[in-house]
Amino acid sequence: MGLLSASNSITRYTVTGQLKKPVLETVAVGLKKNVISEIDDHESEKAVGWTSFEKPYQPDFSGSTYAYGTYLVFALRIDKKTIPSKVVKKHFMIESAQRLADSGRQYLSRNEKQTIKDLVIDRLNIKVPATPNVYDIIWNYEDSVLWFFSNLKAANEELETLFIKSFDLNLIRVIPYTAAHLDSGLTDTEKDLLLKLSPTNFAE
Amino acid sequence: MLDVAVAYNRFKFLGDEFLTWLWFVIEQDPSVLRNADPDLTSFEIGNRIVLEKKHKKAFERITIKGEDAGLEEAKVALKNGALVAELNLVYRSAQQKWQFTLKGESLNLSSLKTPKTAPPESPDEVEGSVLEKIFLYDKILQFLEKLYKTFIKLRTSNRWQSHEISLIKKWLSAKP
Image 1 (cartoon, rainbow over the protein chains, first blue to last red):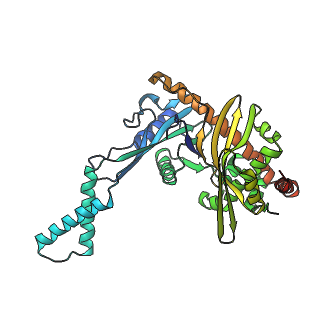
Image 2 (cartoon, rainbow over the protein chains, first blue to last red):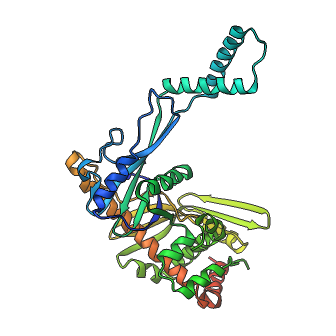
């Protein structure tokens, strides 16, 4: 779901740490370093990387194209190949039968079976195109706030991992505790009280 | 600060209590809402409420859907020890409407519909459209952040135990 879509999901983050100045150059380096790589015609099963908001299938981070006012707008792209298990099974059986015929043996060892399976999956991955999923990001670097347009756990985890790798900054997810501890202006005493809170019973 | 993964489970009850309190202030103390947004026209429960009740190892989940979501039924569940886990909300400010679902345990927003904006018709219009949409997201997120701050200040004060809990219980017990 893109940020311009009619309906969206948002996960909020607080960014901790400071970007090195000049900010736009630092961000450009981080984005280019981990730009999505194409895995079609390649044996890789999955690729995760940054892409452009406006051109998610032709990423271009030249000339601050990702800066909109004080906001940085780009996207996380996760490309994944899915091969039906029955297709893997078919090619595995064919390859196994061929190996047995070539060697004149009746059985394959567990290791040989695993090697054949890996080989079959690699061959199929070269033929299968990856399905891309694009998740938009808005990063207000002045306020250290980032909005990620997905609530999917796996996509959020990929974002958190790639973000620290690219920018050397941590993303802290806004959840009830972090929103209270970091963003609610609590005093140290109130933060101590927060740690001791237990659920309220509203029942009669 | 606690590790986020640990804090998620330890303090998810705070998000559920926030939603329960939000419903209470919507019905009983709208001045709290106006303090968070002076332009506020209205803030109402939308078309979906999810309640969860945990008792020892038992877990019960109740979903109430529809434009006239059965609020009384939901209140009965609250009186019986459930908390609001998800709440669909409709926010109107300066004659514009936002609708979304807020999840207690994560404070994530889903099905967020902002006021309609014109789609960009040329590459030159993209930046303007994005900035307009950012403004609309920011408006609702800031409103929610202010409400959460108000809740957390109250929740960590003596007033929560001495005053607010009894007001919420009274509200739940009141006949419609």
